[in-house]
Length: 251
Image (spheres, rainbow, N blue to C red):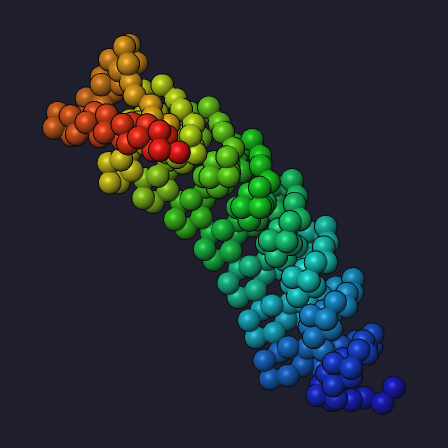
């Protein structure tokens, strides 16, 4: 076939013709967007690595584009292709519902520290693997935090104590979803604004410490807060639980 220009090839692609000739597929515009990229955008796929690794000026490969259109691969080499902000083909596939249990792939992270595991968890995938649950992005938001926000629950203290850069613990997130604990060590976990898990439970579940639980809770508070702050926390719990039940009665 007589060689054509990028513009001529794109015109034909726009008319429904797909090329398989590598030399034509490699033709690109000034931004590195190739004929192969354009065909992938329109649903065409290839398994040829030489073509899949073609990238534009942002590092976005043909494999990325195919993945964004629903194509998937299990090839570790291709899954690791990343663009200029560290977004891998695996990230793109995960954003469309694909999942993997391969730890090496799950740990791949972009420039924001967002891993493939984070992306999968944001799509309701869950894991109980502690190593994966502890993966954190640049704001120290873990995979466990994401799962907790989606309704997943753990009683593992080590995981419950994980905090992001604002001091928000996994326990805090679970409590905001209606989960309750009476473990004083967990109840006193607080954000940088000194909002405890106990207060979150009072707000979202109407919980309050009673009897022996209250005694141990106060003892734990004394290890972490001033007398004045302890009184504020106890008052907040009382007020928040009252508001909770007021809302319930209005429903």
